[in-house]
Every structure is written in structure tokens, then in C-alpha cells.
Image (cartoon, rainbow, N blue to C red; front, side, top):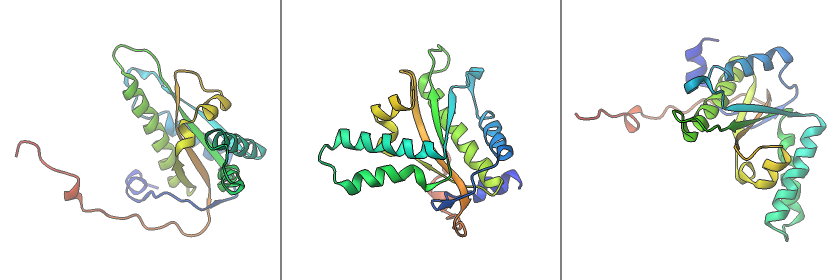
Length: 186
């Protein structure tokens, strides 16, 4: 697939199924991520893969975080949290590893990690892999961060869900460019 085709036609694929990406496909996903814009070559990111039974353990961690915030949470809410990681055969947790660097503020490093996540999504699309980037409250929850082993200097950028599309991906919308592009000083 050509680069412009991937950029112009990538869409989020929320319904995913087996199989997970192959080892060769995964390597391309992460090699693409490492090409993200990166001022001072800090590589302010790291990635955790979650698959198999680890998805169930992540679901339990999600349920514990929901219960911590909502001690009277209904059983349905806890089950929903447990089921979240089971929506795809592979999850990639994208983590921004922020460093003190006088020329590269943390915000710029966080954006760089976001670009790495986007590169994974583009590389997935180019290989015919369905993918969706999810965050939500759990991405910022201290129990989740601790349970995944994040350091004080780290933040979850997102949970990337990857697998085979269950059905035909939707056609990307084509917004009117004039709503987003303007000339300064005209």
C-alpha cells in the first residue's frame, strides 16, 4: 500500500477478531513507530503488548480501578471493564516516557509518543490489520499506571487494539478542508 493511500484512507476499526498480527507484522508496526518525529532523538516512548490470558488480567485491573472509584459499582459495570481488553486479540499500550531535557519540553515528548501511536495505526492499516486507539478514564488512572509498571515520569498515551477486522471497515468521512485550513495574514 502506498503511503498516501494509508494516510487518506485509514479508519478506526472497532470490531476486531482473531488472528492477532503475526510476528513479522508486529515488527513492522514497531519499526514504523520508531520513525515518529523525535526532537533530540530521545525516543520518549515504550510499548507493552497484551495478549492471550494477559488480556484477562488487564480486565481484572480495569475492574479494580472502576471499583476503587465507584465502590457501589453495579456488577455490570465491573463486567464491562473486565471485557474491554477482550475486544481484540492484541493490545499495545503506548507509554510516553518523559525525560528532563532543556530543549525538548515534556509536552513535545508526549506529542512525539502520540505520533508513534499514530504510526502504528498507519502501519496496521497498510498491512490490512484492523486497529483502533482507545483511551478513556482508565488510561489516566493511578491503579492502571501502577499495575502496568509505569514510572512517575510515564503516561499512557493510549491502548491500541489490533486484530483482523470483523466486517468491512467503514469509508472514511471527507470533511470540507475549508473548515480547517486558513491563510494567516491574508
